[in-house]
Length: 119
Picture 1 (cartoon, one colour):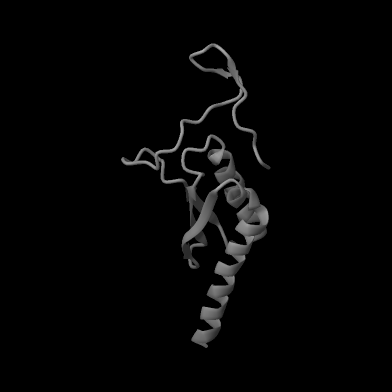
Picture 2 (cartoon, one colour; picture 1 turned 90 degrees about the vertical axis):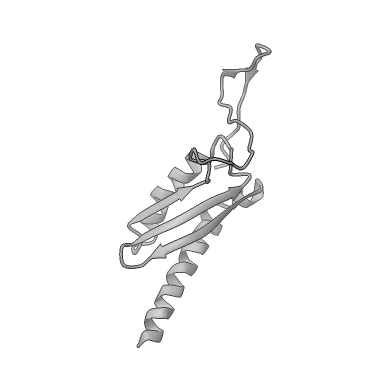
């Protein structure tokens, strides 16, 4: 019987992995990565770490919000999603560029169009 429980757990991890691949192919296309850090089957919590180009990307907060809202709708066992890029004020960040936003001006006085959301 414990084999059934293990298979169900593996299935959940596989479904979360497939969800990320299916819903967010642009993460990989833009040099980023998404890795499952932990899945707590009892509480329904999943921890996702975005890395690579996601660290320091100006649209990573939008990507994180989309992951959080879509995953709980698509995978019923998931109650809460924790996702971050590791750039939450911890020292020694990933060395990414500062985010820019549409309409923001740079030092040379020209408008910066900023990054375009890939989704």
